[in-house]
Length: 238
Length: 266
Ligand SMILES: Nc1ncnc2c1ncn2[C@@H]1O[C@H](COP(=O)(O)OP(=O)(O)OP(=O)(O)O)[C@@H](O)[C@H]1O
Ligand SMILES: [Mg+2]
Image 1: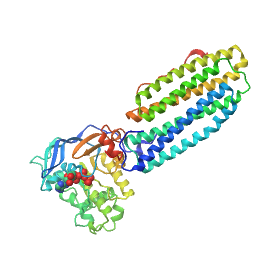
Image 2: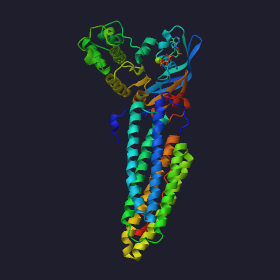
Image 3: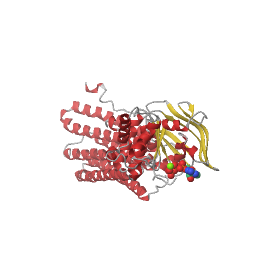
Image 4: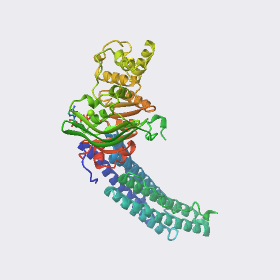
């Protein structure tokens, strides 16, 4: 993991390594959750959706365990320098992962509601593609975290633009479908919430990437985060 | 947001330099304990000196009020200026200098006198009190600032050496502030104190900073981070890194500093 010298107190090293291992475990579970949530939607697999919903408890559990461990390390060791940045970033990354997990759970719930509704052509696959992109970002963000790779983290931040653009495109598509046939409205609303969830996942993964940059360089990235979600500013709604 | 008033200021409020040290070296016989150190101590600022045992913190601190003069084999070279004036100039009287640059030593060293006289000694020789009542006031105020008034107010005429180690240390702090020094040098002032007295001394340091310069040597990273705005890290007689305290403790630039503050084998 961190290729630094060891602490004089070796328990301290084990504590920090343990917390970071827990983050990786949590990251793995979240990756699985978003993958399965998208799959459950496309395949109309209600059992899988239910599994995603239930497994979110494990993710929440890991988040609270990580927080307890961090509090303990802060109280016992009063971390400084890169150790301080490690525990701070762990806490934030854990919170971000927990939110991503919640969004996946929310997708799974909506999938269950949509069980009997007929799909709106093409949009489910588009959602899956978007999810795939976020999954990919998350994988790379976690890699960047483990390797303390600020360049890779920067790449992840830039990938978020792609997700935002996919969301914008889907947003317009849903709007079109709803205007064409009001019977689509209910389904499209749920689908739109899912798209928005995935877009928010991208934001959380972006903030994980920013934590990696803080962790490795000691500074938060200064440039404005790339943003391409313009549905709230564009005239589409009028 | 946290309420600012509960936190020690983390940034230096001013750029006025109180003490400027240039190319200062200190030798004990042939052994060089401080190696060409340059440092600026800002006015109305707390500066912390940190570093492993034996790296020269106390030695360097003692340069600021010429306490090293009292050690026979000790030789100091380089230039140290207090408000622009060379403190090692022939014209400077070390006793006057020490009234301006007060010191609390690593080991408590009360005079073999009463508690009252320990504190009154400085104000008396420097003529700071106009009357007995005046002197009483100074003694009480100083003992309060040293966070020891309540413990000694009923036995002011008992010997200072009869106090516990931590009480003696606070008596020495009271003695040091009694002359209203412009600079206060504190060498591990809290190493013998319990958490309550430590918090009181830290409170005092923060109060003193409004008017004076404080330089504190401490082995507690948390204390350095809590009380100071500037931190200097020493290693084997060298000044390795000197900067804003927040930066030193969250993002040190030097590998040696990082290893030291994080408790790693450097
Ligand atoms: N009176 C003295 N005579 C000879 N050598 C001395 C004397 N005082 C200090 N030294 C030496 O100078 C070096 C620096 O000592 P100093 O007391 O300044 O260290 P320090 O950083 O204050 O350590 P500590 O944290 O243990 O108080 C040490 O190697 C020490 O042995
Ligand atoms: Mg010392």
